[in-house]
Length: 227
Ligand SMILES: Cc1ncc(C[n+]2csc(CCO)c2C)c(N)n1
Image (cartoon, rainbow, N blue to C red):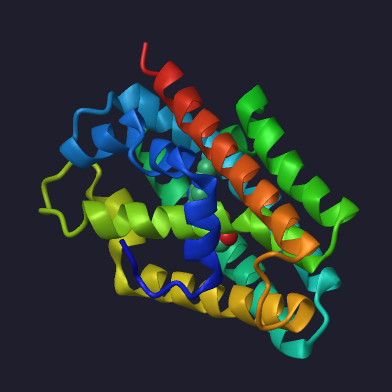
């Protein structure tokens, strides 16, 4: 499947092997698709995901400081803005309808799977460079893009219509194409026109694959809230 998310992403996805499908076709995702995902699983996931987005915003802010060009800075700063001012709104709205305040969300105790994933990404950035960080961020951005494109469009009465439409929509698909272009440009700048086979490339593949495994664990965590 290709959605024009650039050249780098499909190469890393193919290098990740079966774990990519484990992530994008996880039982939690299939439950979202057919509407049979228990509501408690979805809400438990959303509460954790609220905290996840806060740490992801921190990781994109770290990418601002690791940027080497103004163009990279602008793209990463725009993502921080979108995360803290827009994306998180879906979580707040859906949880408010279930009686959870934003205070509850902000103070939710992080599940170990959540903690492992976000701190792994932050450490990829702290211990590495801009590319290490982007490789750890990419499965999140592109994976939800692929999932959204596969699950949408949906009928108004679908129980998870809001969630699916967020990621299936034209705006989010454009975010993925922009992220793909950012990633391609960053790779060319640092690893050249033939990045595959360079030592830096092997490291990117490892970062990407590990972050993808952590996405699988995040869905597992979501199902565990289903009772
Ligand atoms: C576990 C988990 N993985 C991915 C996303 C999707 N997502 C997280 S941040 C962001 C914007 C750019 O980084 C997007 C699309 C999520 N919400 N939760």
